[in-house]
Amino acid sequence: MKIHPFLAALGAFLAAAPVLAGDDCDVPVSQWQSRDAVMRRAAQQGWKVQRLKIDDGCYEILGRDDQGREFKAKLDPKTLEPVKMKRRDRDRDRDRNREQARGNLGAASAADAGTAPGTPPRASTP
Image (cartoon, rainbow, N blue to C red):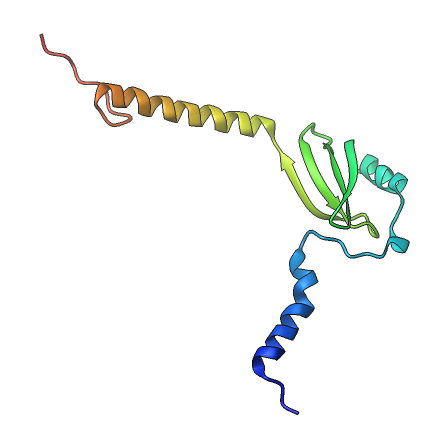
């Protein structure tokens, strides 16, 4: 029996679909470690946990790392290894916002003066 190439490709795609999910966890509940184990793991990492919940079959921690930066981490419930982690650096965000404000401010004052940004204003004639 010959399998149509489209059906073979579809079967391969469907078999790989859980892998494509990326940050989802597919672990039977019977193999999960306890919330206490998650908290111990977080303490070992120097994390201060503000919230612990379950999302997409993973443990999800919202907290601060040992440098005081906010983060969100998804942990595999069996191994407690990070599946996905996002850190937020408030200083970087603040600096970026300041730079954007300066850029927008510079563009507005240049428009008022009728010049391109970075160009000195024209001298007025009497």
